[in-house]
Image (cartoon, rainbow, N blue to C red; front, side, top):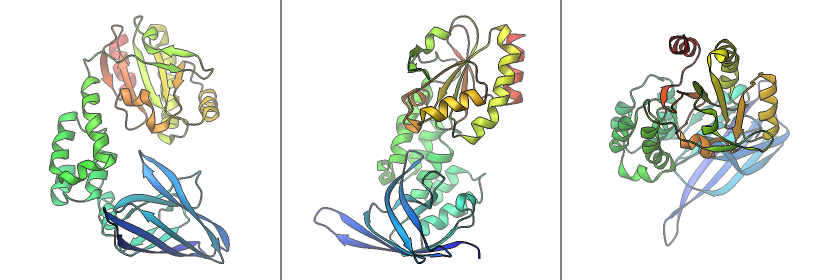
Length: 327
């Protein structure tokens, strides 16, 4: 029988002397699962952090916990894998959590926020300003801007879209992140001098990025061992490096890894024979933050004078640009 997890959520409000407090109660049924664990996770900075867990006993489990609402949480059966993103609001919620990869067949009913999120994800080409104008008070609008447009829009357009949101949403971590991101993005546009930094290599030695500038073009490459698109792009980066290294191309890798062993293993497996640094902080990486990196793989092509000449070149675009410059 197909493993289908049925979760029943009930959320109600308890008033305190200072502000509303929401007591979250969850009763669930995991069909076909006699034992195991369901994890409740909080979403922060593109990462899920476990805040509670419930044992499955004879297909039944339950949660009871005070939570910030409305907010974004996750449900998973395995904390080493992806979590299913859920928007909790103050409405009773029922979730059919399917065990398929990425929980792709999961169904959520009862959450108006989740309904809006599901609808928007069915239209990935949606105009973000139109979404915000139609739903200026929705946490979903703030999240979509934060998650899918922070790396696609120039600073001025990010700022313009933020102004379309209800002022209350500017207090959310999603919009606060964007507001801090805007001045950073303005400093790493094409034509600007690349910011210098110092990071630790796999052996723990401190390496300054500026020490690699001045003799030719440098591709500053942001990636991580856990990033599928990064690993799929790595063979192309290796091919490009081998093709142009004799013409002065260098590559400097910055990893958003958290696990040192995984980082080193990926370097070896993917044959990334250039300098690497990481502060092993994932999306909290100060090195990535210095360049406003909100998606990986990302890269910056920097000339011998330390000036950014191109950004986010992948595949044929990377080869074509280097061919034009170095030939």
